Length: 87
Image (cartoon, rainbow, N blue to C red; front, top):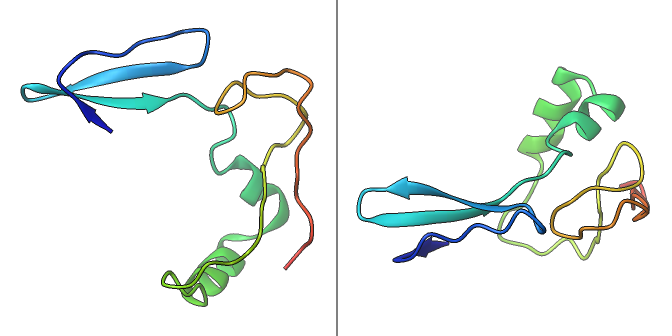
């Protein structure tokens, strides 16, 4: 999200980067793509990625963590990963 005002809140992992005269507001996460690397090879990721229909909702609701807890978007060290159902 772009903002005219800098937005930072360490409690929620929110921070901003300057983009010209505006601020690009984002959130920090510890998950990244590491969870994908645990389950898939590079070749599998490439093959599966080509099969994604980006115009259709998947209906799936994942929270991809390698272990419980993360700080964005839910600041809860006990929040469990949600990795099922496996497609």
